[in-house]
Image 1 (spheres, rainbow, N blue to C red):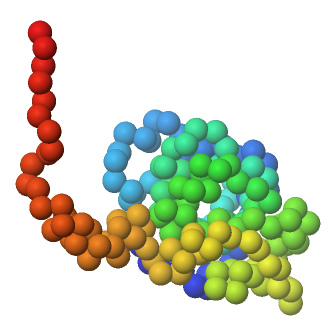
Image 2: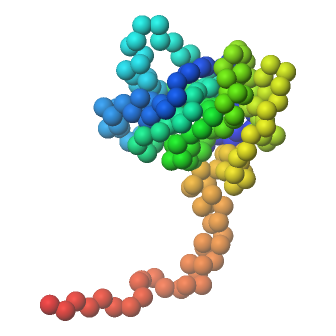
Length: 189
């Protein structure tokens, strides 16, 4: 996972509330287990609608309750594979938010008025270290869990976090000094 500090660039707007994970990544594309290649199926049904346009820019601005519905990891995978690096919305479904942070896709919660203003600009900057979204001469602060912030700034997924404890794990295993499970297994028939 790549570290995140500042995400700057053109803004894409999806001005819809309650966008669920089945709309983001329809069920027929969930057969794959690798995390790549999902971008082409993003918003698959909506992409067939006349006038649909959602450019693959670094920042996606969306309506409230983004990512609701089932807990499929494929939805954040598809958004990231498509090219989005940050998603700004008034609110996110909890599991979707967590799934984003685990792969290095930055979800940012801003007030509805700030999101609406952000939808009206061409370019923006999301600064994770400063916890600010900057656009149109403004800097709007956002909150984020400090552990999540640490992981994203360092590019640390769950495996990398575990590997940071390699010395402690090795010391524990050495102290344990057993090569097999403790106790005996008896079965009464």
